[in-house]
Length: 275
Image (cartoon, rainbow, N blue to C red; front, side, top):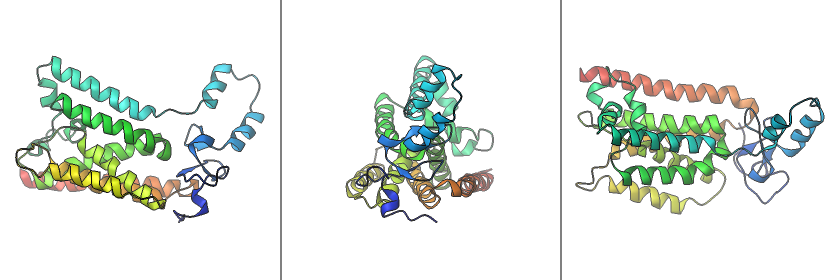
């Protein structure tokens, strides 16, 4: 188990920079300025130079430039683009697309996919604006820290967790929107920040304010989805923190799949009791 504090969590080239990113080759901690996007995770500058020295000269310039380029948060941008496209389809279809994607616990057994698709549908422009702005802010921070696949898993499983919470706590209701997934990002960032010794007081206040709004009469906000997303996001981040490094990769995959499997089992059992 890797310690989440101390020198091991500082960039080997910039000792004053805390970081959660590890080189997938040598395992050293690297900050965003010292990382290079690899097929899986990131490589430090030394490992990149070593790889280039052993690379045949016949490789195309395009492929070489792609390997040198620092990876952008493409998952974050893709999620925003897909969500925006779904919202446009909702508008042009006079609500039909939204109705098909909205999660309703009573229909879980016949439309189980809506527990995920509801994350991409929204009820109003302000609704999607707030969620996508939050995704942009936190996604651009978390995706480079975690890597693309981990970040995507965090987002989708947190959204799924929000739907499971709605199923358990408000089975007669329904939900749509990325709020559960976004609250998962809030929780994950807080857990990682605290694990690295940062001060998460301001973020905690922000989470508390947004969570409280859901309990206000007439707010029409699913606090159940928020709670579910928070719980699952915090759990996922905790597991990521405890399984840092290449030697824990298989364990991390297993634990991530275990969380997903547990949510599926809980939702299946809960849906059965509604019929």
